[in-house]
Image (cartoon, rainbow, N blue to C red; front, side, top):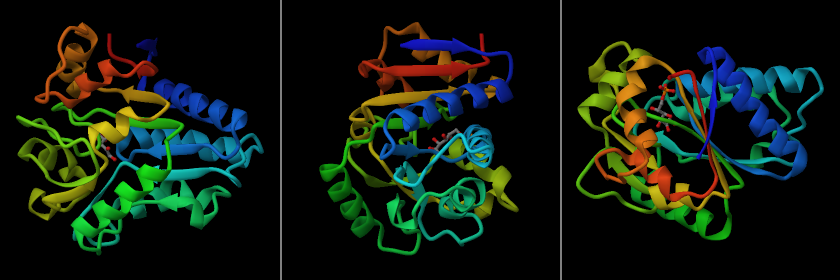
Length: 233
Ligand code: F6R
């Protein structure tokens, strides 16, 4: 694993955006796997700035999102997050965006996305890490599902994501997520981890000697091209 140490969350976002944008320059029709959440938000801010400065062209780019809540309202959906923080600010064609439909039947959506991944390989996958080690919505468990599937959120993840909702009771309990197998098939992975809440989950990944379904982030040890960008020491 390549590790880039930074001094702050903002610097992590700048460095991570730079890696994604370099990949886009090298391959204009890049398929980017995208994440949502606080870490990703800073990355998209940098990407939008680069686009406005004429340094990033998304006209041929393609994207697929890691996950989406099921039965969520539009305001709190990851689709809305992506529109607000990236899609509506850059010249990415709407038809090049793939994200689960929060209103559709979850099993049908999982099947649609499995078909997408059978046909398409992600060039560069942006990931964050949950405080409990989750990646996408692959939650710590006795077993993990390799492919796109519907997942029930853990209490820890509901608590971590409650900041986006009026109360924890409003956080959707289910989501459609890429599986760890889909994630590990990406050509390249960029993992951004900032803030002390992630310290324990990251420490187990950095130790490098255990892959455990109880910390899905440790599965990244199985991938040959992961770059970790972190302000944690
Ligand atoms: C969201 C996702 C999650 C987040 C993780 C970290 O699409 O895939 O796994 O990456 O929860 O979120 P932040 O950056 O908000 O701490």
